Length: 254
Image (cartoon, rainbow, N blue to C red; front, top):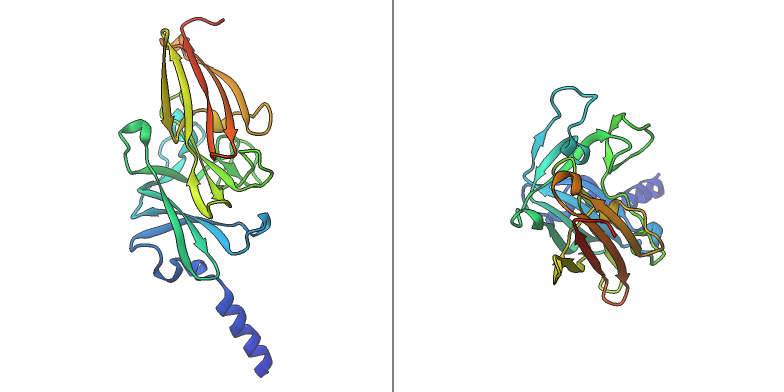
């Protein structure tokens, strides 16, 4: 009996305190954990990612539950507030580092919307449901976006309107032993001018299927909405751990 009790106590003590909500007080007061994802399956058993929001507000969907407005495709019923992703050390029960998810495309607003219930078949993964059925999404749906052979990254999306999809990529960098939000560096050609654009967000990028591991080439046509034809060609730079490429914006196809 004593041996059994000892084993039970040891198992309890080895459960990461994150499972109780707030890991040993490592997160600030008011932090609400959305999801956790262990990196054990990718060879990093002492690391896990925490997606959390500081003092979120809750926004259930209203109106016709069967018809989604365009921005609802990335929101559904959602939490809103200052959003963070932290890397947690299971062995020492401490936060290694944290990144803030800022709306760089909207004056760096320190707030983001994360669905807690949304229909399947859109931008976020909903396990076990056919397209159109609502359920709890897995926001940190870890995949190999950068082509290094390890599923250590996940994407966030923001559909502001019926055209345009802001996307960003967050993941674990083994070389830095940090969670990072990947930078995207583009040479933008428009009206005969060329400028360099650096951001953590890119229109539609991480919703597009790559042509090859770590390589994307795609077009977004805004001409019917008074905009331009935008051609992207982007590669992942493994040494710098950034995405690099070009964007050619024109009123006519070539």
